[in-house]
Image: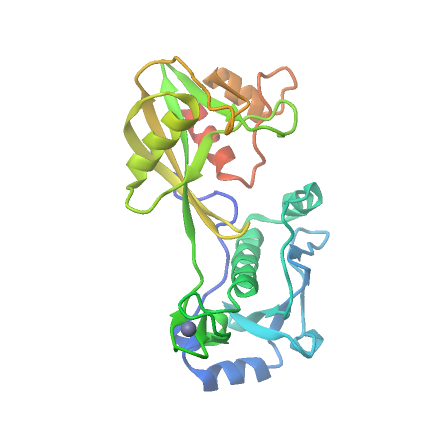
Length: 294
Ligand SMILES: [Zn+2]
């Protein structure tokens, strides 16, 4: 399969992250005083899409008094910020309403939202130093926190996750987790562990969840997934055989589907053997790319 160069959800943001300005406190102060500066409007951590699928922006004057501004970057040379509000916390779940909001956002807009959501969530969970336990404070215009006790600098983290199709005789392995919506299937996925390559993580996850051995792992595409801060890396691998032994803690079911099945599912055919993942998930991008291969 050919690599996918563009198109996965949460990519294609027009933001220029302007890292050189983050270190420059005078430049950031000037950006905050710029009358053109924009503040991302959020409902808690959720986006507020306009009717035409854009993010809503407001003036910095609308930030609450106790907010700390994070410099997202420049769009059309205008400084854009998001606000961390002390005490803000993400919920445990990802409610369907939030996915409905994402459905309404244009592709690049979702990318800007992903950056804001992940960095705000990181601030909410890193108020204290992992090294000594003292309070931390924002620095680098919101792209780091420094410990008030030992001085350790902490930076927003990204957690790598592999998501993959095991391929056998023209069919793809997909599975469904317990409590998923009826009919929904997707590619198997799992967090990479310390000391693993992408290829090793793909092979381990497919064997752990479905009992299938794979070789020849090939990278296809990646996307950020801001719930809270994963980097999804999509791959395809060759299965040695098609016998499935599921791990019931991870999967409720796993099945082999043909390219024709996947095309019907992606087209929303109610008689397809699966309901495809949402378009903003890289699971959708990967299935689309796989189904298009001959
Ligand atoms: Zn410390």
